[in-house]
Structure formats: C-alpha cells, structure tokens
Image (tube, rainbow, N blue to C red; front, side, top):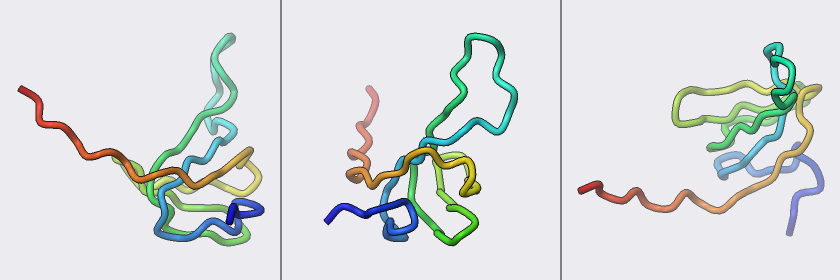
Length: 79
C-alpha cells in the first residue's frame, strides 16, 4: 500500500522528501532540494529526517513531495 500523503509515511522507514530550499538560491540554481534518510518523526508541522550528516526538520509548508524508498545498498569496501 502506498501512503496517500507524507503524513502517512511510516516512521523508521527510508524516505526522500523534495522540499523548497530554505536558502536563497542563486540565479539558475534549482529552487528545490531533496532530503534522503530515515524518517524520525511526522506531525502536522512537518517531518524530521535523519540524513548521513544531521537530523533535518522540514516544515510542512516546504514539502513538495515525499515517498518511501528502498533501504540503502550495503557500502562497498574501497580498495
């Protein structure tokens, strides 16, 4: 079953959230960006996603699209 909205995504799953950028992009830069990671929280005010770098709060007004994605592939050892 596919969630109807980002509010229905299961906490603990891996997600990608397309959002309006919270900085001022330079001319020619895209106005949107993606946040990829584990969904930590969902409420009426938005979501919190744990990325590789940090926990990112995305306000509801900035969410353009969100969906569940498959688990990350295992990391390869580098020679």
